[in-house]
Length: 112
Image (cartoon, rainbow, N blue to C red; front, side, top):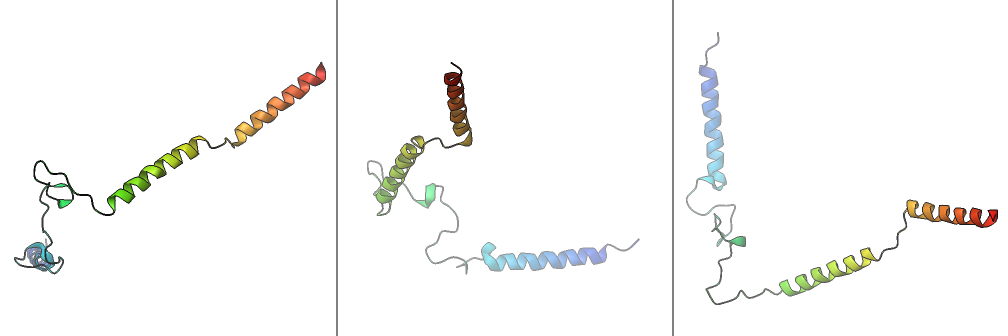
């Protein structure tokens, strides 16, 4: 049976190479990382979008893009809702049903 020593030494070398590459990519360094810019938080602080809530009694100030985005989204939903509900029924089944009713009416008027 072959010795397990080559496998353990290969596993140790692989582990060393992987752990050292993880450290250089910001995983274990202390200090600035090359993957983040200054002022960037490394870990989330537990708030939605990493924004701290305003003090009690104050409301959050809207950003410039929020009002046009909300108005446009609301109008899009309204226009699509009205437009799609008023869309004519152009399916082949509806057309065939109307033609069948016309033929039945023509047959019944012709046989009388």
